[in-house]
Length: 115
Image (cartoon, rainbow, N blue to C red; front, side, top):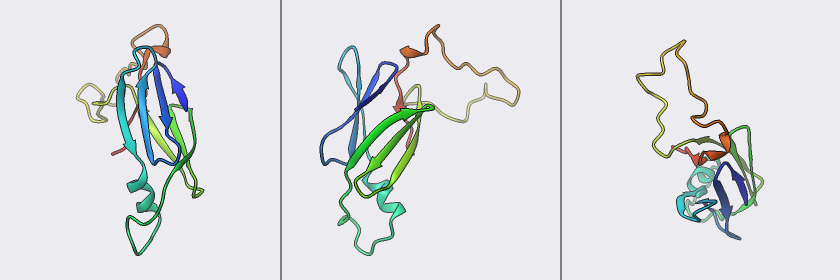
């Protein structure tokens, strides 16, 4: 289990799915299954037979670091919203980029942006 802002990421024992919850309202916000991403990294002849479970989890440098029982480490960027897009009309070279809309950056929810 790890947290950032008002989001808490957790993994249930022997599961390949991460779950994001709001730390104050306990609302379930997002599920991310890492099994398909790990299977893409590992060349196996039989898909679906490779057991993946999460063994370590932390947040550092606005990234979610996921360790698996197989020794694979995945680093996933975190986004402030689930609908955030990297292509926006207002983000031209040299334009002002808002890092946080609050005085404290602890109010954001760290959505996982795996595409």
